Length: 268
Image (tube, rainbow, N blue to C red):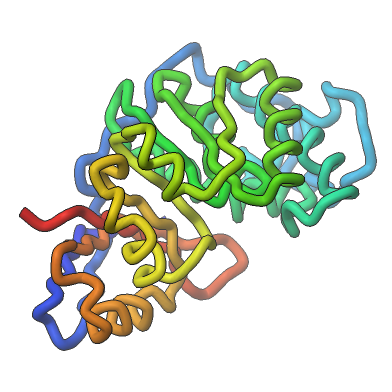
């Protein structure tokens, strides 16, 4: 994984400059318990299997994928993440929640993104994940950062019902709002609103601008096309009152491109 230096993207700039990677405001994840040591499981035992297994086999297969990509989680986090995948994949057979239906895809596409996001959220923060779908990054974020107060927001009723069932099954204290984020943000205030693969920069700023007091800071996980989205939003005059900072970037195993974390704040 490459390091990225934060890049302030000014609306007055004609071009967007990407920087080399250094994590800004990096805070290590809280040590809720001793980090697990790898068991005698070789990386080649990682299987792309959705078929139900015993909880122990699920934990072992997830652990193998986690260790294969150089990550660390605690024993409790491992169990919760494995259970989350299993329950979410079960729901996926009824609803279209995710395409990441094996352990390696979950780790490389979902867990890595969540871990990078978690590095930029301070202790005890109040967070709402919008357009949660199958629960990423909100549910994994709540698992690896139990100090956070995390809420989920999903406007599609069937998906919101699935999220509520997943949260109850995992015994997590996570409210699920079955409504549009703009409606929730009129009633509740958060320090951070997170989103991944929900909408373009311009659309999200446009949606949230009237209720920005409830947003705090908007943290968006984006792919390489974010620069095009930024230029379009700037050309449409949607960023006159907002600043956009590229605060982190990381490589996704199996892909040539990088993911980035954008922080959008109201300009002072």
